[in-house]
Length: 542
Image (cartoon, rainbow, N blue to C red; front, side, top):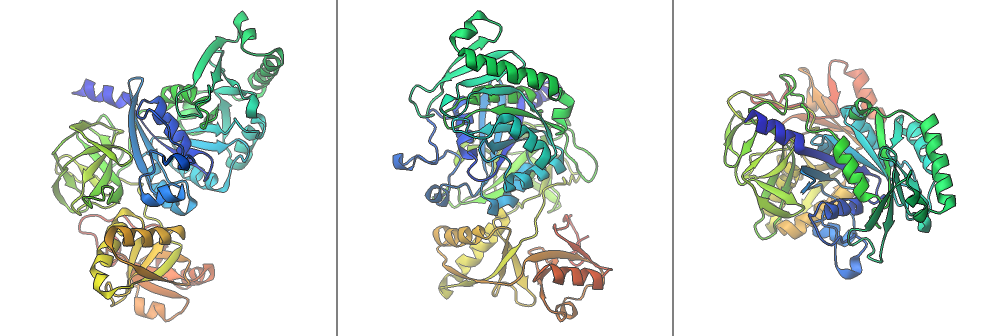
């Protein structure tokens, strides 16, 4: 068992792709699946006229708008590797879903538009990767269009993000003259031919050693001269590559290509799987949990309701951290303080699911959820509590009171709100002494209100009205002397409760928050919800 566990851990690669909207993330995801053999014809989100949509976008709203608004899990085999690709929302209003998904990844691929360079959303997501210390691989996309010089992009990575880069390959040409990439380690030029397939299938590729006389038959004298000059400059003035710097996120291996035309996708995938780390240990309140620990353990980082509209089911996405998961096994549920049966496991290609018998560290599996899981829940074999850290619950920035447009459909509205809050799509807060009468919803991005209304109507048959509130911050309050009634009298704020009964205060602006912090030094105002243990006190958040 020990040898089998070590072998399966070594095969796994679990990563997420991060980028600013429109950098080509969904297109790159499609092409990785194409080269991994998971799909046979790539349908870019732009191919609307052919009525094809991206494989990773399964929700009707995503297909209509051409954006990703939920995370999806995509799994495929490639070169004896078991690859778990966590596709994240590209739109900035869904960043907290991306943050949570990054907690389940062992590496991140940072996608950059060659013409636009480092964009605002990329900076935010990069900071999260840096905080977690995970390796970051950079793929410079859209070389099939004219963009900025590669050296300029390398400099921007250092100046804006504070990370040095090492180009693993180097582009030959740009725009219509983009011919291929040069592999610096192998000293081989990969020249591509699109053959008019518009990126729907794998491209023809010819690999020639730069030291071979044959090189002059694939590159012009001018192309070869420029390539040699660029490589000499990189060898003299660039950083040296070390695996240690890459593994700790101090240095980002850099690749160039075009996801749209497939140029450079296969060389990137090959190199990435060689360089990306296998599953590593995860922090718990009892210390790190190693993947080779023979006892199974995992945590829930995402819940998705209604992936199958015919059955209205709920799926809890669990990252396996250690040991071997076996279909139908029991595990100790830390928050509930009891054993539960981990039923009906599935693996995914977006909404398409396959029943499985077992899973190993690094794998992401879907568990049938009868309503017993929440984001951040820890599960472990045996009776000992294991509590994983690092799956955050973020402070919302936009708030609204929810009202049902049809009083006869109020129960459907409440059920929908409850399930969507368990997914993490929204957070629900109760006004003091009002229960679920006129609940308040909080979201990190304003577009989530639109998704909330769409899903409540189309999945639960409940039409709602949203009355926006003037608050911009929410803080969980921890402290023995907190009195909500007297606190609210000070104005510019409102005290509410989250679904666990923990008190939060909604603040109108920065000044109101700062004033409360200065006036109540004995209280803690937290931007992330406290970890809930079995038997925790809701009053103190202990």
